Amino acid sequence: MPDHPQLEGAPGPSHSGTREPKSDTQLAPGLYLVATPIGNLGDITLRALDVLRNVDRIACEDTRQTQKLLNHFQIAKPTVSYHQHNEHTRATELIEDLKSGKAIALVSDAGTPAINDPGSWLVREAIAAGVPVIPIPGANAAISALVASGLPTEDFHFLGFLPEKSGARRTWLEELAAREQADPRSTPRTLIFYEAPHRILETLADIEELWGSTLLAVVARELTKMHEEFVRGTVAEVRQELAARDRIRGEITLLVEAPTPAKSSGTALGTESARETIVARVARLQSESGIDEKEALKRLARELGRSKSDLYRELQRERARKR
Ligand code: SAM
Image (cartoon, protein in one colour):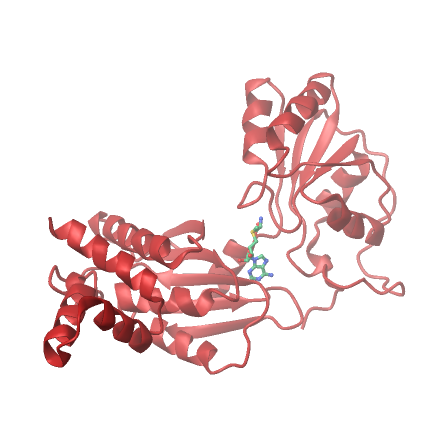
């Protein structure tokens, strides 16, 4: 159990943990990319605190969220918002400040800036303007999940969020698997995704159907927080364990063993004929029950727990691939 207050929920006033004395370090000008905790405030680094105390201002994904962190560590510093909607305009203003010799920190709501969070645009602009860019390493959900997952760490592929819509996600998963399988590497690889709790079951079901049920998977939930949990097993086992719960909450990082041709046989990826699963199943239902395609799709959608429109799109994609 974490022994430091967490980012969510107000930290208790009596906490006497990781507060640092004030420092008057003169910081060199530049853009400081400061990693902040992903849940447990004890994960802030001494260097991060020192930089946050001594920059001229802090660009934040959400100023209110960062203010909680700054209050906890008694840091009084001007903040400015820097998020996906004002990234480009704000970057111009920040670069002007940086060129005039200011030290500016960039933080996201949690974890490492520019990793599935705003930042990469500003970094490129700063480099183009000849401004030093200084990383201040710290918490990151993907790496924290990977190192404790038990899956291979020698070779991994971080992919961020999967597409939200089922059809797009399935196409994306198929394309990803095709790329993974075409890669003639010899070491096993771990794929790392960020996923929302309300989509994790659908995503695991898609992976199971498209890539096979025997691949190893890990759901790393609520890392560094009170209810930190790792659900490990095959894709099927992990899905079943989570499906048995009333509700899945919290932040999730999903890790899956990269599909190989051997592990994907018999799945939609495994063979050309298996890839026609929906086409074949619809055709079989039609001939067995004497129903039309629309009715067959409806029954199959019910059977698979998927929407009819989603299944219809997949049917079309399969047919398009055949042409
Ligand atoms: N920049 C952040 C980092 O360095 O990890 C990631 C930001 S991304 C917008 C947020 C996603 O990261 C969450 O939706 C979740 O998938 C994952 N994540 C963040 N904190 C997590 C945690 N404590 N446990 C598990 N996954 C987490």
